[in-house]
Length: 482
Image (cartoon, rainbow, N blue to C red; front, side, top):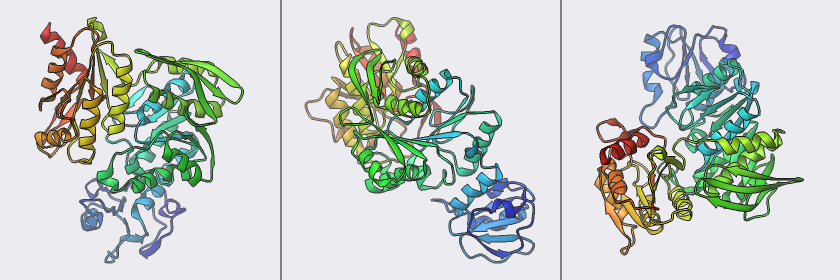
């Protein structure tokens, strides 16, 4: 493809060279450059691509895209843009033939519920006979093929390539978790979103966004670009979204008057049943994941499916059979224990409160919570997590999550600062030992919730990353104990 075609839709200044030349590939890492490639100088938090121009040219780059003033390089085309991240997103979309226009793209954003909503949508749409792609936290999927996910939302270059792969595989719907980081860093800039779902907004990622308002503004970007929005108006910020966008939307909620709502709720340990009410439709839904917060996730998905004229039959069957790895996941069922063990990804105050409140509803005896907080992340939420975990649970076992570069006990002490003095709690730095202690003290009718890591199969320590899949860990412990 000629550079001139790739630059379509981008405001730029040609500093040197010409644009009537062929392009091999687009790169933002100088180490990956091959002869004839474009090198885009991205300013990261630790590394500035402008410092690697000479290395890129030495490796064969014939086109350099910059946002700073640089020296003219002989036989190299230099193009200056206002923002190289946005330019890369457009270049990538153009390079891969604007793939997001060739299928329906559904973006899901919010603090909690993105992954669960994505799997619910996947289940419903596949039940309706459509081929789906998923881009998210657990993994990326193209139909039945699973592709490892390095982050919730890939960098724009990798994202557009993934879209292209989906189009090539005849995907009808791409369901995409859209993180606040990706919106702030313009990874999804230039992507055509047919729909956007707003799940909720609670405290998270303030190590990155600094203020809650900045966090909200990042999320809002998705709804300003989507053709149609599905918004939870029981959330204060959901109401704000509906006022801050100009596009059409469907509101959903349980407490406030909404377009899509529910009635006749029946919660139980294996799920929750409810009746949806939308225009002339009233239909009973059996959701096989417990928790009222999962009803909110289901409502967002139902809202999109109704707009897309998906049958009620497919909606009901999809939601009745959906399985979401690491989200309120009952494990070790084959051991016929007289207590329950649940693994959940909850790692924010709101997420922890949701899963523990839900588990408490069907706990016949005691609720035991095993949790910690991640290192190198928002420190202010740690005492909040401590207070929530130790207040709702009958016994809290406070342990490590992914400590990263921090000392595990420093993180635990931050969590302990919020634990009430009269709470019953145990401190165990080693996460496997913490889970073992929970299982050893479990009595008939107890529910153990292991929160924070969910689907993850690793633990990040100061000097290494170790294998740590809690499904396997729980089964190893049960084998040892028996």
